Image 1 (cartoon, helix red, strand yellow):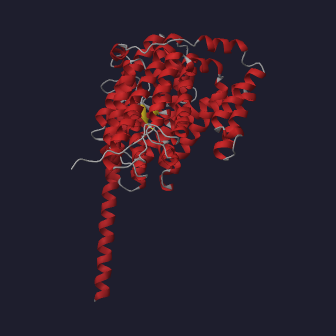
Image 2 (tube, helix red, strand yellow):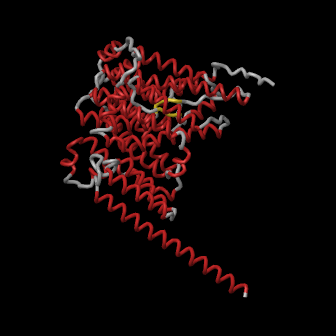
Image 3 (cartoon, helix red, strand yellow):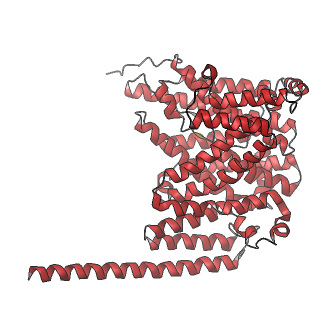
Length: 509
């Protein structure tokens, strides 16, 4: 018997609201990427001619594929209320790549074009790793403590996102502070903005108007922005393969950032797909992780350097009653915006102080999520996992002079900041398992810390044999102590069990 084909619409009115919600999220990321890279000294030819078009390719490919998946699910289950997954650049991962990969590469090479190639290679490698992780994603999620992973990301959020962007907010306080309070009132206080404009968009509009009105932005910048309107062809590049030589050479230490943040990205996709499953649309997690990985690699082939993910906002789109049309429209609009220079125009017109408050809130939200999504007993693990990125922030800002600049404060700052993501996860995981009195697993992570220190992924400036011997020995001693704790724990359990059996026998007699 032939299956009945369901009429699953290409577009419906509910897709419009969902489109604007997704569009705003991706647009904010694109503008931040452009403004941040220009501020780092990257030429417009790379930012608008390579990075933005490449990122648009990733967004287009993923959104169109997820629209295809939605139609396939609709036909399979005979439903017309299926919602396509929201997709775009992962905001936390975007900041890690901006400040943890691109900025160090630029500082160490002194060559923006070479730094871009290295970052593109990192993105390609990240996409490849996520594609491979798709085969074992569930295993990774089950064996990596959530408090450790989210605590490490909260460290990035508090320093590089909330902290760094709060500095930019205060650079023009009459613009930034006003925009920040608008966002807090709208998002936290649930205050409706005029004309029902989203709070973040209203904050950017007011901040931009204030900047021009008070003279912090000149009318010439509008002209400069409009001059960026043009045709930016989306062309493939060999940058990923050229940068790979350096990524596995002088800058191989960047793998200490790429590996864990890619695992985080894969888990983020997994969690968000699981959330949609709870809402009634069950997609294959492994296929979604593979789509994100392939989308990231394709974006890198066209010059993009930011991994992509399924957004948690997908659930919001489901509640709006969206189908697949919003996903298709998002792909089309971003392709056109990248090729016509619209994003370049917005980046020139909107001051960073007007956009930065949005990211202050994003960073604080990530910190709150790290604590809110874990039991109270795991708060110490979240907190300790956050700390290595404070040291990493100091290192990044002082670049190669970090050792000399912070020597008077503490000699531990530099080694703590080296491989901060791995250090955060290892310390967080050890703390989680100690809290659970699972000393055996805690000892495993201590041994992982010893190995990573020995080869230079942690506490060392580069990969090498016996790279950080003091730290490696320290983690081995921790493992030995934890094995002792495991033995003591097992002995106490046996003693308590024997005591209870003895008491029961006495009562019975």
